[in-house]
Image (cartoon, rainbow, N blue to C red; front, top):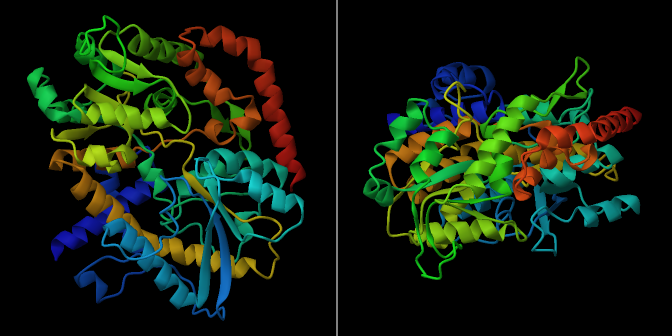
Length: 503
């Protein structure tokens, strides 16, 4: 009985840390647990004996069987996030299926979840929903796409201000108050996310370690290295720099050989902007965006990553080649014992060849910039799901949409998120208890810069500062920025002016 309570308290603390105060240490998030549940959640007397249930404050509502039309993604990583077709016995699938049943019965609504035809589009069909908006067609109540597409489109006036939606309580712990603060602009908020989007956890950056190979190379207890604060990029490079074997004997270092580390020149480069605590865009006193870049730190960071990717014999760096397929190839090679370490996202643990892997693996955070950096931080890829309401929706329908989103998200915290994080991720996909502890550290360290939200609108600032430097094998981020600084300033000024016209 006590185990269940502790598990849910930890989940609540982690969600609060991830969605509200991401920069805290794990010990600090543990300290938040009691106050968090007591202050922000409704807990019944009978429930405290067996489980902690965080509830919403929706009144009794009956919408007479009305449909809530949700356009979601068909892409493999996201197609099970909002709706599944039936019970299958899989813990995540069945939690998602039961969630829909519970919300439909509670509100007397029908959740009509449509998946965009473009199954190979990992960001979602923004073109489809935009076309309907421009035509004045009230086709969808909610669009669930990537942060990348939805946030960049918000400046066009396509989305409702979520602060105005009746029945949404965005201060509740199942909504990401951290994300909402980052995404808000002036006094408006056009896209939200929270526990309904477990893609945010799926896409967090992690380091996988082949435990048997690490033991073969006498690497010691790497979990202790992390906990002692010494897991840095320099430490990782030192471990892997000389680990290489020409398996196929062709005399060429290619992706079929054996390496100390398998990584990518895209996702990995992006992830280091968070794990190194590199800020690009901040906020002014009126909650509008401002440039805020430590160029010296960025220059050092680019140099470190280029050195790892291109000058370290023990590292295999995969290029981006569409729909993030290189991430699957890296995971496949890792599962075949071709890498000691793999830089990836948590979702890789769900892939069948990772689940079939014979050697046990451990999960570590992405490395820090240096030992002086206090905490470990985790990047969530810009494909994480956010929820927007098209402006073509009539005002008379926004209360039912708000109620449906609120109910879905509150139920998700207690069912789907627990099933994914506590049962599947920490028990089914992880191989040891130490990895479960590392996952707590990784999830509580979620960090995001607004430059990724508005990449399209800011002259690709976020991509140019790191990703494109690594792809081009260049260490000239300072001169490149100086050359393009006026473009970034103008783009940001234009973006802010456009948002102000929406007010």
